Image 1 (cartoon, helix red, strand yellow):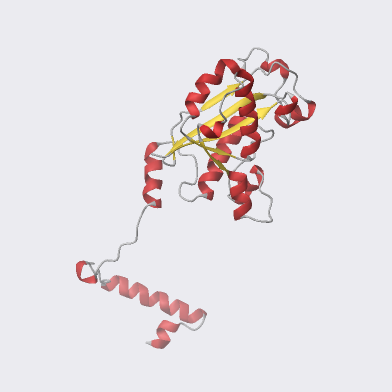
Image 2 (tube, one colour):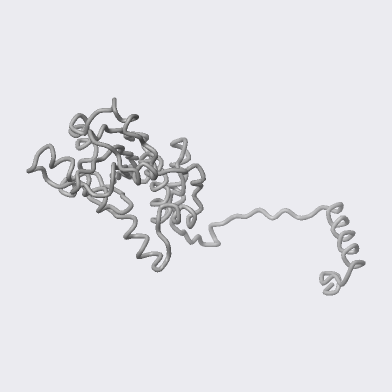
Length: 237
């Protein structure tokens, strides 16, 4: 069983070393390339103002977050949720750096996230596959024909959902978020189908001959084609 969690965060600014904090976490769980709906979407009170530049990116205000839990309130449950999974993150060093700082503010001896989880950086993957091209999430959505017209601002949950679709298309197989398990199973069967070569001796294909009326209709159709131009079938016959 392969358990993967597509993860994204929004923050008060760019540098946790300058005291900036996580304000939103979006996480989408995938097991064996199937969406489980065991997701997480958490808003967090950063206990500090949000930079104007960051607000323009995600549109989340300090006032909106004022009644949300602080990171310490969700730290334990969230770590339990991601532990042992493979994290799928676009520009992983950014999000991991913030998560590591959050946990070390609670406990300076706390191990880094990569000790608890595997990590795949989809930005590094995209740069390798599409060298010399733009590889932002928006650019990848366009390249892989994923509708992101509803993405006016950054948001951890929305970006995690979009990234999940991008990742599955980049790695082959499932191409979109499935609404029903049967659709996911059908897609999985398609991606694991192997080529089978059958002996002609084992194939019994029935041959159905045209009846008189069908032969006559066919002949009339060829005559019409002949009137409009040369009909190769009549010429050969």
